[in-house]
Image (cartoon, rainbow, N blue to C red; front, side, top):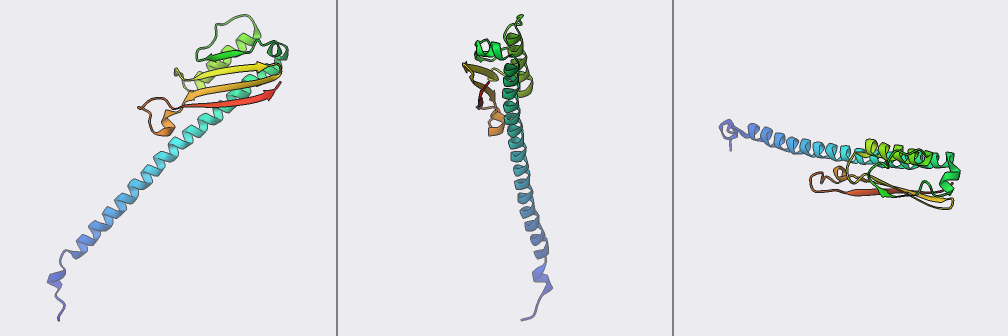
Length: 151
């Protein structure tokens, strides 16, 4: 049998097309991994900010310990800043809820709770992290971070 170049016409082009197809699928996979990494990074940032926010109000409570022990900082779950009043505790809580909304998004699901039983206090922050689950249009994915401490 003799080798005939005419029988091989187009084989090189077919190999190039197949390799381009495989490379395209690989690049789509890389793009999908990048999008997932970006979502996870944003979610991690929001969790870190929520923890920072819990420590912010706890430090305000430690600075105004007498009022905190008297229960002036106790706050049922609220998503709207309390009214501006004259006491330092109310001012701290208003600033805290406002800061939550600015940091974690001003949605109906961005809320804070403070519950103190004597010197034992638990601060809870809730926010909508639906972007991290990839269901940004499908509804809320509420997350909560709670910090418990002794004043």
